[in-house]
Image 1 (cartoon, rainbow, N blue to C red):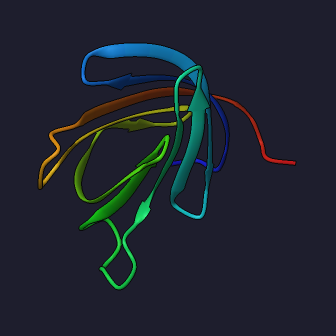
Image 2 (cartoon, one colour):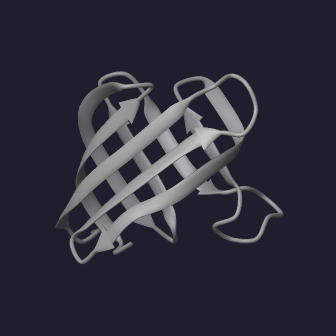
Length: 100
C-alpha cells in the first residue's frame, strides 16, 4: 500500500461509513463517524500473518486480513476475528495525497 492519506469506506459487520485512512509503515490508521481504527502487525508476529485491530474501545488480537486489491492509488482489505466476538471489517480506500 502506498503511504498517504486515503478517502475510505469502513464496513463493520455489514454497516458502512465513510471516513479517512492514513497508511504509514504498513499500518492503517483511520476513523469514521463511529470508530477509530488501527490495523497493524501483532507484536512478535511475522509481518502480514496476524494482525491487531483496534476500533473504538475494543481490541481484537488475532485478526485474519486479506488484501482484496492493492492497485496504485487504492486498496481494499477484508478481515475477520479468529476468536469471539465475531467481527468482520472491510476497508476500501482511494489515495488522496501524500503525508505531510
